[in-house]
Image (cartoon, rainbow, N blue to C red; front, side, top):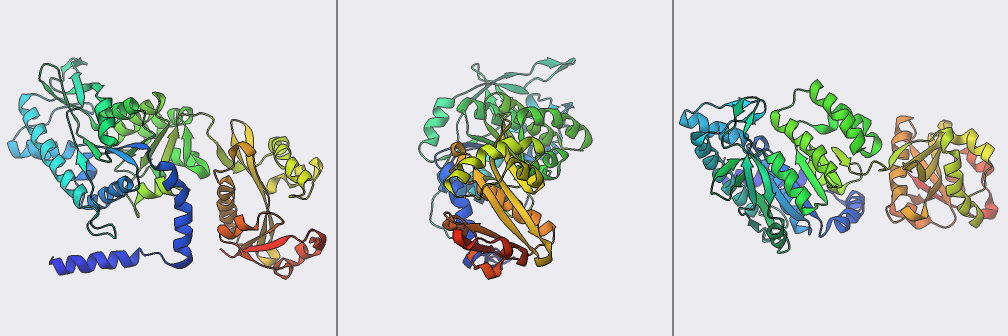
Length: 461
């Protein structure tokens, strides 16, 4: 392919993915809280060698470089399994495995070193060039590596001596942290060294886990060959795509038995649970399909993978039940007293409970809303929105709005509307436009109270 054709293809891709007007504004507004939240945080990203060998790896590396440019401190841990296989084939050396673990003798170790060295140089070069074809051309991504991992031999397992296959003994966290403070991407290979000068072949999932735990990383991200968003455990994660550690532990073994996952994916999934149990608060499992899954997982509310949280009390968004009535009443009572919401009795709340959605954390209702359909007019009212004072500032109301929009579409309704006396700006910022009482469904116009002078806002999707 000629250089001119390359440029034409790149220009075409940029045009296809351009965002203009209201969509652009909405995308920027939705990403801004995450940009602010992630700046200065430390993320460890593990990329198996299978993905490093793919033709579309440059897109993933460009996303990693973009994270760095947005102020995220990145440690990138790469795998090398297929590259080792290729090097062994060239040298005529057979691969020997005991389960998912390679047996590494001296001749195999020479092939490992060659494969790691070649891939490492390739990643460094591609990261350095990853912003060259973007609007950030001229920005420099600096990459650094070092011998920060010490290792020990696996030894004999089930009667098999694994020779130069090793386990992580220690990670020089202080030096890695010093490099991160200079805004460099730290590149770590699955190689470890012993104090006596031996070199050991390590699993990249183990290295990523130990580096993340040692650094106290804010996030550990495993990029997998398969799509975790399609796993059964992802369905159990609900609207938020999040599982507590205890939930994930209960589901993962069954998942691994049901699915024909690669050895790398199995190792990464198990390392994810282990890291979460050892103090990494958020671990993400993502695939590679679709537009920039790494960015979508980290900078959108919906995400595209599975997140495992070290906190068993992580909140979930769900349909309200009769057991939630007391929690909802506690949440909306102060707003009723202030006049922000129209008062409703406990009995009325119990009758209307099926219209409510809630966000619950550790058994406490921390946010709620009601969605009242008017099917004859293809509309629904987004009402009774309340967020616990301790959890304001996290835009939980936007999570409920997203759910309401999804519910309305599923019911065949064309638009939402809301009535408010004090917070019209929030609705306007989230895509609503000002309307009037004449825009309300006929049944709702009959109950509209002009004395309250509520502002009518319309969300036309």
